[in-house]
Image 1 (cartoon, chains in turn yellow, green):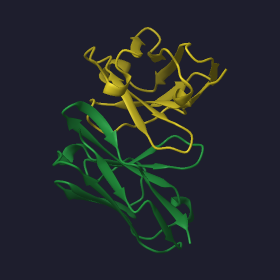
Image 2 (image 1 turned 135 degrees about the horizontal axis):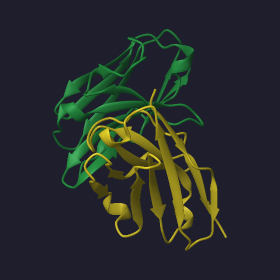
Image 3 (image 1 turned 135 degrees about the vertical axis):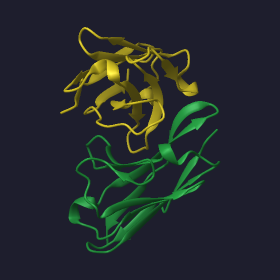
Length: 119
Length: 110
């Protein structure tokens, strides 16, 4: 069955970058796309963007334009999300999730990666 | 920009009771993209409903979705102990192209 496994927790200083990975298994990687969502402590869900191994599309949320980069590696069936110029308010759990298109519901989700930004 | 407003913020109910959660969009949206997720503490969100009313694989039939236009509802017919969680609605907006989540409704044990 479809499964997404994300990389482990990260501790970063303000101004640094972080790169989170999401490895897919149990389905044909290039038939789908992936959404990235984050959740600050005690807060709701915030969409960051979409990347599609199916058609190569990448769409970033306006709030993250210029600071985020999403990439993919079909050889390892993985997608990556890099966030630059980290601030303390970037402290959050970051999730990847599979979708058939940017607009439709996502299922399944990865387990989440906690990124802590602190000096 | 699309905004999704969920109400109430918190719903205090007892097991066996009916839960009705609301999601209102700031503009008319395509019903094909309205989804609901359940999230328990320390866990990733789990898809419950897509396309307004289509239950995801393995989701029990006590969960149902309805609505159209700007008003959507998630109903849990009889709350089970494992249903106490936070629920989010989600919709795709065209201008700008972006996925939007509602602020969530917490269903807690009364």
